[in-house]
Image 1 (cartoon, helix red, strand yellow):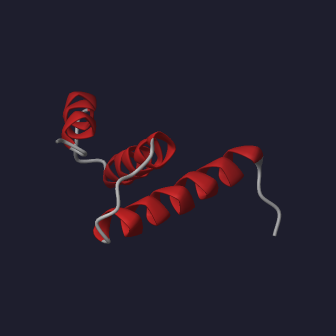
Image 2 (cartoon, rainbow, N blue to C red; image 1 turned 135 degrees about the vertical axis):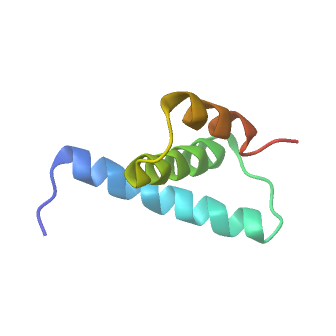
Length: 67
């Protein structure tokens, strides 16, 4: 399979976000890289849906891993 650089980066981000989501579900604390991957992958999914504004996405990103 041949992927462009952008496709490879998106795939890596998605896989990292999926792993972070599994760790969070198990009750583990996420490190910085995992938290960023989780937020970014979720935001990209919301972008793909196309029903949220940029402001909504920014607010969701801020609230996603609230304490």
